Amino acid sequence: MMSKRISDKMEKLLNNQMTMEAYQSQVYLSYGSWAEVNGYPGIATFLYGHMQEEREHMFKLLKYINERGGATKIEAIKAAPANPKDLGDCFQKILQHEIDNSKEIDKIVNLAYEEKDWSTFSFGQWFVQEQIEEEALINDVIDKYNLAAGDGKGGNSNLYDMDKDLATASQEGDMPREEKI
Image 1 (cartoon, one colour):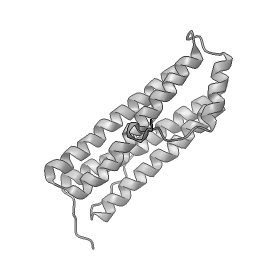
Image 2 (cartoon, one colour):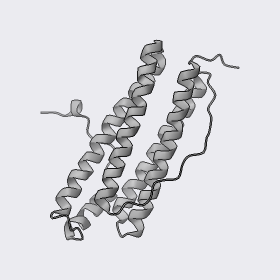
Image 3 (tube, one colour):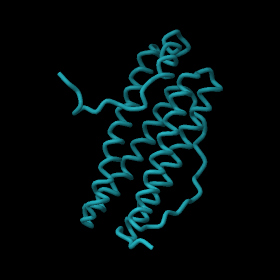
């Protein structure tokens, strides 16, 4: 049996985050299905891809907890929220989910710093960077949506083009420090 190298408080936060990542996956699955049945197969493909990425984050947390001698607790996840009223609402809700997720990651990193748990602090930095990327990506999608929707009435050819573009869009955002002049 492996000795435990994370505090009980950290173990609880990491388990909570693992459950949150599972919930995030459910949100993307739900919204992807909503997009698909509402005639946006490209946006659905994009959202389904993000669903899988959130599952990978969940598994990354599970492996870390186990490798540090903790015990993972697989808990029930709450149901995904109600369907969005339109694409703009969908993207705004996704952005808010990502912002909320960032705040929870910050709690892990802050506790790791307080406890001088440098392994978890380092592990948490990957998630901090990932959340910067996630928020930038969704903000970029919202900007594209706003341009495509034009006067806000939607249903125009620009939304059709946006839908096609998102079908093959990267699941990763650009990091500001990686930009070249």
